[in-house]
Length: 119
Image (cartoon, rainbow, N blue to C red; front, side, top):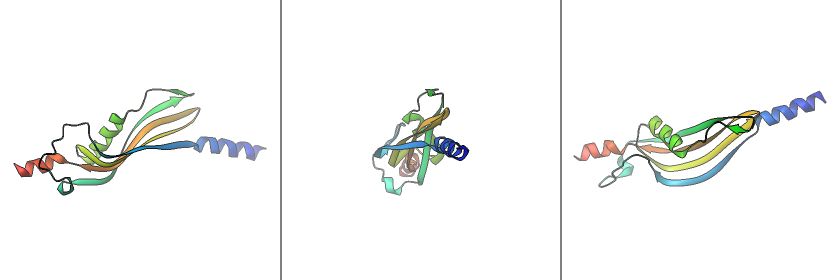
């Protein structure tokens, strides 16, 4: 009986869920000028992941994660202003305490580098 209780507790503690929400060709929350710019020729950092997470205690969330927060995190990590081939997913786990969040993963492009060379 003690082993079953330990097994159930372990499974509950490790339980979580990730749900794929959508894929996007391009996403940005910055002012981006794509006139006369070839995105494929711009500096890119591949497979950058950004996330925005919030704490959950006894089924009560302490805030709502936002796509803007996850995107800002990814753009900051990738040192760019545009994300291409982005995949967005929602994640959560809990057992008395937990976490809920949004993750975005894709390639980060620095469009400002491309416009500097054209002037």
